Length: 363
Length: 130
Image (cartoon, rainbow over all chains, first blue to last red):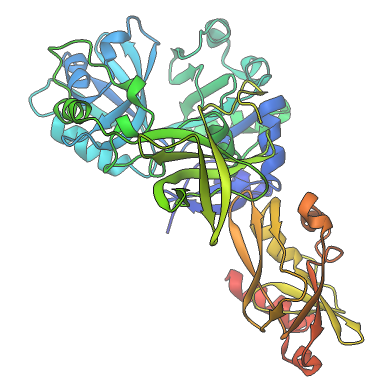
């Protein structure tokens, strides 16, 4: 039996098709995934992300703990409200989860972790916290709604509590502000501008209805996936997991080796991988012609298998099949994909495919 | 509630069959099937002249979500395919019973009797959902 978010009855009322996802029953779409996708690229859409978990890390040891726990360096968060994307690695350098950490104040950080990995993450956090003066508190009392699209901020702002409106309007990308239990970050997972809003879970249905009233379209996990794929953003469990190094998942930019003294979990393994070389390359790809790329399809250079698609799909914006893939370091930029026994040409490109409503690659 | 026209025959794999007379049958996917699949973005058609066996995979429809096989409801030879679907697969979402995928010359028209009628298909999808 899947868990249900506080918005579950509203999704059903709004005509959602519900599917199991990471232990939760979530809306996949409300009629048309493609129209929901376009709404976010052209206007404004919203996503129930109450299934994700906010975890508060507090105490005088919070900063040293997170500097040890995460592969990116929270010391880069110079002031309250700043956000950092990071991998949480195991000793072998595999990815336990990818997450965002917000600095709330000097001794308080808030992490937002994936739904399906929540229990595993919490167990890992508690284990690693031994010896640090920190408390770890999953905030299951909070709900989360993402409002995304070129008109998202404008439509959402008047619906925020008065004391938050001015600060929220002035937020720079990848920063956040809060008032009471309300928390607004200018972040997202679509490649568009927008907010991710946390609030008391019991208040989430009212906000959802108000956003719908303001013309923000409800969007399901289907559109969330095609939007993040177009934006070239990784999906945990597809593009990387505990057996994959961030160096082979396009996440090298999130690894901070600059402080030689900082002994973060997985650092040694990553440094060894870099010394050894022969790393696989993580790339975007475009199918030349019609059909759809899917996860786990194999890529070939002639008779040689040189890689695999980790996230494949159809881009509604480009009207082409696109994907993310892991290939041999020496792979050519033109390869073939095997789709049901047929070989079709693909071209390797650098993601993102689409950002802020605009194509970033030439077709 | 999905649309299930009375005059058609159905399979448990959600194809519909229209007996066009002269031993020809048109095949498509049901309203229920297109609803489950979501927005279609690609249709891989069978080849004209292909000999199909009832119950065997013969075409593929791909939605934004997933690829799904289409199974031939009957034995027979493909005599026509709906080429227009190559450019507008979404036509199946819009009108699943107007947009047939392929037409067969039936090897044995009595096989039509093995297929579900509208009432039996309605009952089948009801049972599948519970």
